[in-house]
Image (cartoon, rainbow, N blue to C red; front, side, top):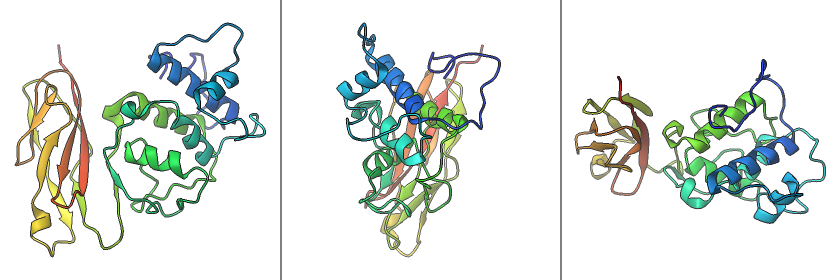
Length: 245
């Protein structure tokens, strides 16, 4: 984030320090401005910019000096980037995050970031802990995934009886011309049709994958390798291709 101008330099970062709502808004505004190439209008505050662009609503929060919860952090940050920058890569059905029902005031933003691979939860069930407070280290991880798609994580949250796809890895680092193989597993195993995996790449100019899961790097960049079943269940692996000199 420092390299991208999204956090200030200094001798200390304070990873365990809590983040306030006002700091979250400032970060979301900076991310929004950086993505769109917009400058701050003269005399306009960060909060007014956030209100004008829909990052926050006028009556959404009373005290911006209060500590930010994971719920409020996700709700604000999900509005910092447009839909094309937070494309869905994961299947996360409504109501399948254990502690975030669709009636939760932050559900829209939380589910959007889960589907984009920015959030994956703290356990195999995808538990989010929406009332937990946000530290600077947590904020750095989440925002890094927002600005760098290769850092995003794969997850699938479906109804208990639904099928799930698992990959042996969720990230891969290759050099141009290098190849490596991914292994996909589908559970439960009682339906042979669902065991048929289709492979695809989000950026074929960066990396391609054959129908055996072999990934071949083409040129520097990032790509998501997607393994899917006939019913649409999928899992992803973020591939980063780097030219070594």
